[in-house]
Image 1 (cartoon, rainbow, N blue to C red):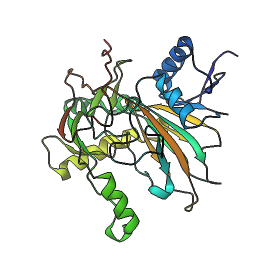
Image 2 (cartoon, one colour; image 1 turned 30 degrees about the vertical axis):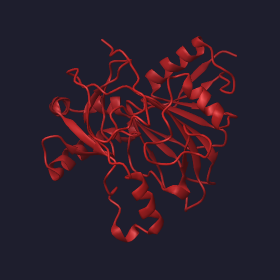
Image 3 (cartoon, rainbow, N blue to C red; image 1 turned 180 degrees about the vertical axis):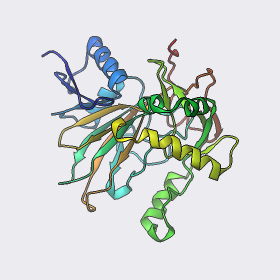
Image 4 (cartoon, rainbow, N blue to C red; image 1 turned 90 degrees about the vertical axis):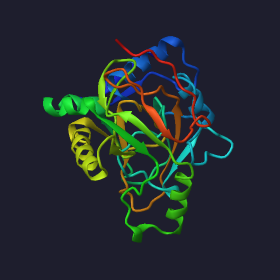
Length: 301
């Protein structure tokens, strides 16, 4: 069966038909998927019958795998698989995966395990479209900015909402403190596209106070989350979503009344982000060498 790529929205997302992910993929198929990922930023595969090992095998077609997370435990017996489980916390904030380390994952895969009867959609936003939407003066400003990303912050959760379980989860998440400075505008190493590289872990603009930073980050973030730039994916059984972590953000909507929701995540090791002047991100605090290797990718001309 030939591969078919069907757009889901104008700016982001496509469904892929004609690829059996349970079988090893040949180089031609991987090249088609990589090009589709470059164009559409997020790819959806239906009727996927994979276990954790099969999901890992699929993700390895795109590069070395990271371990599950720098601080959060993996699925037992599967060190590369992170359970995205509503029972262990809910990532209902806009973010790009693990941007608090020097080289965040280049790509993430999510596979549906337990789907609530309603709600539980995942939003995925196109950070390149957001950058293109910026008015010229704001774009010129963004081009010059760097942001400090960290895992050590309160997620804006009020104290009264933090119970014993939530406190334990937060303690685990911040058991190693990471702080990394990334360019606010990142150049994609394969396509040369510019995208806003911010999200929930970006807490401060380098050189500015936290209150000043928040105003600028909120302004830029509003362009990322414009409805026209967002894919809203309603999960079904036996689905897998692959998205480019270098030029997207995502958000898991907490709208399912506490019903069980579980996805398994496997991520592919990424390169060190580069800004428009060719300067690389730099680590301020925290060693993530136990979590990820550093991918070597030539920056597009």
